[in-house]
Image (cartoon, rainbow, N blue to C red; front, top):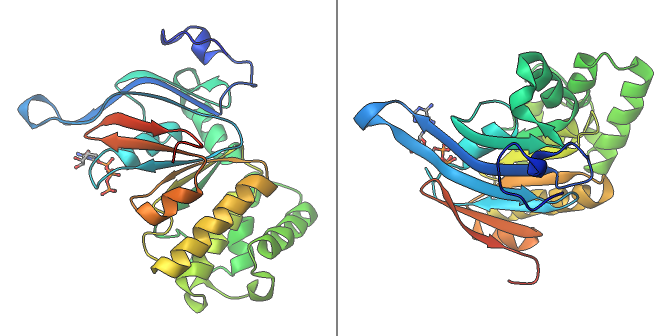
Length: 247
Ligand SMILES: Nc1ncnc2c1ncn2[C@@H]1O[C@H](COP(=O)(O)OP(=O)(O)OP(=O)(O)O)[C@@H](O)[C@H]1O
């Protein structure tokens, strides 16, 4: 991958072997005129393959806005972004839908589980959407529930599980379609400190064992130590990139 910073040139090339995420000069504002909020003011960074990268910053610093752009849930006003070698600006609605379904696993603060489905059924939802073979689905769901330590809770519904267990189900679900990239927005925000740390340690472990890359927004300082790299956003700009070994 070239070091060129010219958006749209070699830095966004499609070789598939470069960083998992390449962002160049991303801009996103909400509203117009005097009332405009400039949530991202020209953000550039890379997420290397196989790393757990934490995105820190105060409330309102632009973390969710940035994750939405990386996940293809929203489009930038300016700048370029590539995920897994694909320039998102060229994908169109259907292409973005496929990228989100097949290449990215999302984990939210509020878990986002379907209340009337069991833990196992929740984990299987992304594979149903992909119309995966039912036997393959059942086998993978069983494997994933075991991976997150919930093999004995497969038939319980979210309301019958603790917060930490629900987030473990959500992590298993995010892995269902073997994504290249996990995106997590404050995944421990609703958990007590001890449970939150256990969930982050699980994320740390699955990034290694499942060979995925993860971009995790958090403002919990104690959790940042588990990351390979930390990006800091302040008022819509990246102010710090802490590489491994610098902490
Ligand atoms: N849909 C929207 N319309 C208008 N302004 C918005 C919208 N979404 C976000 N903003 C504004 O953009 C800025 C960045 O918000 P964002 O949610 O990305 O921050 P954040 O770092 O994720 O915050 P938090 O940690 O509280 O979730 C904030 O000033 C916010 O008020």
